Image (tube, rainbow, N blue to C red; front, side, top):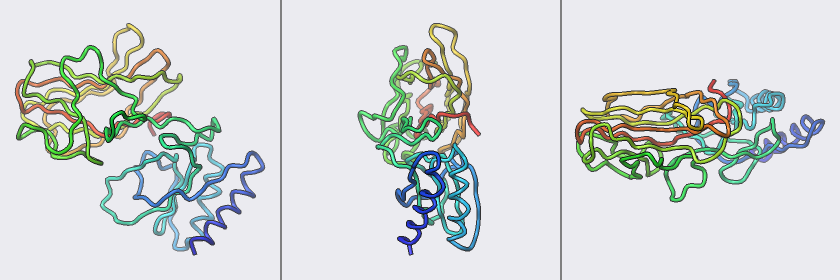
Length: 276
């Protein structure tokens, strides 16, 4: 059955897309439902054939669409990023069909090329896909960690996804000390969307801030949060950041007044388009 579906898919691609340029969507892998920021269009149907018949031509016609998923009774067109993650508890898997690129890249149909996927998941050292590194003006460090932070009643007990995350250890240092991550590459002139997971649990949590700075100009705050947010990972669903080759992204955590001020982040992603 699955082979017949792939043949059907190839026929759609060959007859519909080659009038402009031959681009082949291929089965990539099975994976959980994606986060909503990737989804362009959803369609539900009982028939698997109907799902392919709707989502394939829709993806072909929408230049934003780089992939589509076929799930149990549903298809969706998406922007085609890998990897994808989910907060869903569903055990159902989806079939991802996409234009394949090398690891760490995805196909941008507008530019007709594979472009870099900016994601910091902190799972490896060095991490080739991460666009953030330690800022020179930090006076405390963002520390890579698995499992619980050293102090009780603060910090996460595990990463949101995978094994590792980054956090600030607040058992030493002075109130108001700052841990800074800065972008380490040049960007195109456009608005990007930053998403991430954050954990801010403890009686003396201070502040987490996302800002940009162009050259030596004053930095601009785009998102800030202070105080105890509970012992849970939260999802920042999107912050629009206008960037160019002279502008950098800054992720800054500020130390609170005691050891119960650990702030953590995980899966920081930068999307090359404005937030939906």
